[in-house]
Length: 314
Image 1 (cartoon, rainbow, N blue to C red):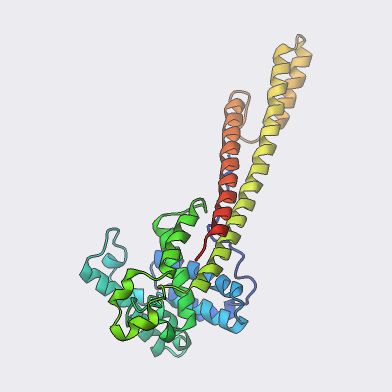
Image 2 (cartoon, rainbow, N blue to C red):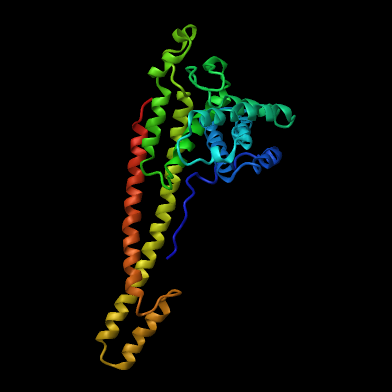
């Protein structure tokens, strides 16, 4: 049975920009990363580009932000693999080592003239607007706007990857967690006293960038719905064909004359697809019907998810 694979992120989103020539060198740097970090970097760049579009950023800034996003985790090249790929929770010591990827990435970019313009993404993408981030614990006024956008995309993709999402069903649960990070929390108590008054109403992440992410997620959910509906149409066609075979089979069994029986059997043979025959077509028909029911359920759940996302408030 044909089974389509749906990219979690809409694959057409970067086509509006001619980024290939600009990023050829930058992307070659990513080849040094492990496959999971590289894929994460690509996803974050994808999201950042589209968030910028919804924020109505200038094209030059959008391109700059996209490249910064591609390179934001470049410092992980220097993180030991046993820490970078550890499936369990990191120890305090391991976490401190992991956090150094920000400063390492910054230093790598600053040492390379071609990468220097994008160093801010590497250094600041884990900083929080309320001063609770790392490596320097700076607050909103000192965090570059590009890094604020990258942080939103970075957190979203990290959760998506951790939970191994393959569909946007229940994706609103992830967005609800990000909303918490956009709101003031008790973590602000850890900020220095001279910064407390200034930042007590600020969350960790940029609320406007998060609102733009919501729109990106809705776009991707609609894209997934279109893929599911395309598959539903395919299943409906196959069911219609197999049901016709089933009718021919019944008529063949009821026919009294050999010539009439052969007529219907020949009709069945003409309608069979590769691998199908008189012995297995009923099983295949049942599989298609079950698949159709499941995909229709997926479609309804995805539409429901969009309704939930539209009602979310920051």
